Image (cartoon, rainbow, N blue to C red; front, side, top):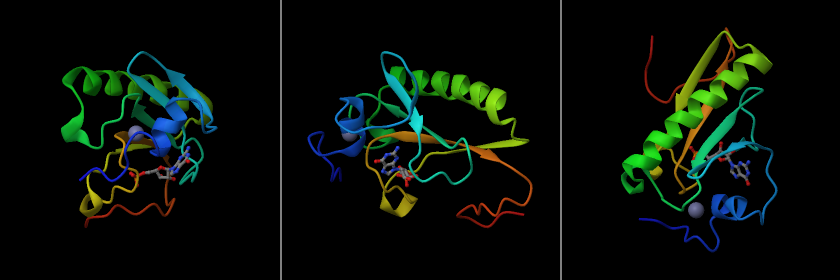
Length: 123
Ligand code: 5GP
Ligand code: ZN
């Protein structure tokens, strides 16, 4: 259930310029900005401009555009932060650890022993 209608949704407010954000890129369908809670330096979110709660609510065109922007942002992060690793994370639903119900993908620079845990058992 979408509990954040566009009027109050924080990412819609960022899209409309009503809330400040450190924007790094935008195109017709997507926007990229720094996550307010930097898990590691260079942590960026790539979101749709249009309000869509989850993966199930975006169009194929938006999905393709998000991945195009993710690749572009990842290259820029590489130039600026030169992390040895990079993790993409995209959460859907409360049970999937989503906290902002406007579609977005995390682009997270990674380093050895950075203490970033993933939410399922991994070797
Ligand atoms: P989720 O848990 O839904 O995958 O990720 C939501 C992310 O949005 C979190 O990492 C959180 O730090 C970030 N966030 C929440 N509110 C704001 C905000 O007002 N501005 C920015 N730039 N990021 C936010
Ligand atoms: Zn929204």
